[in-house]
Image (cartoon, rainbow, N blue to C red; front, side, top):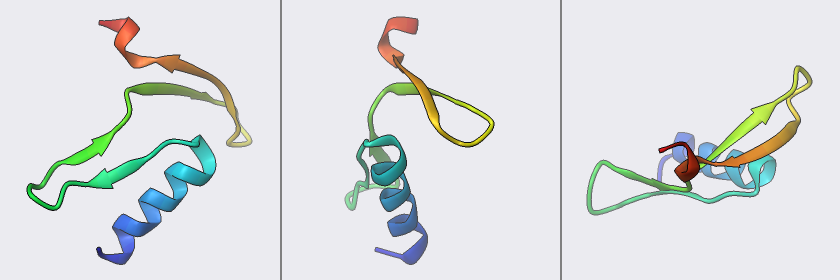
Amino acid sequence: MDKSQQTIEDYALKNFKTSVKKDDASNQVIHGSSFYLIDKEGYVVKEYNGLNFL
């Protein structure tokens, strides 16, 4: 795994408490479907289920 991918995975886990993983068998990324509302200071205000928007 390259450094930038590891940075993205670490950031997602630390700041959003969600997992993001590179699929080694393709060029795709595995991730959740949540949408986050972030305030000006960078804090999560609310989490929305992204599947409810469909």
